[in-house]
Length: 117
Image: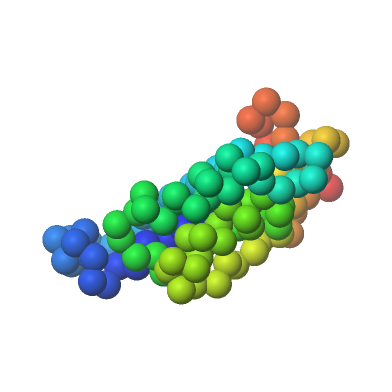
């Protein structure tokens, strides 16, 4: 995930009175799931990522999955920002449980959420 900076961008100048946030969700590059890393194609995709964005970012977040961090790395280097790894952004495990920032553990089935006590 990446958040563009508001100051100095064309959008912020045009919409100075409005409060907004632009959020990009970026899927990792071509993965090698066996090693949780990127293939050579995935590395090329990640290297091309900074060219796809014209506005500067204020934050760049990643899941703790290695393939996601490797995808974010070229964008972070280009933007001179750290990659902020957020554990709750990891993918849901095979058992279907995930943890959210509020500390709740939830079970996800077919896009439905149910709180687990």
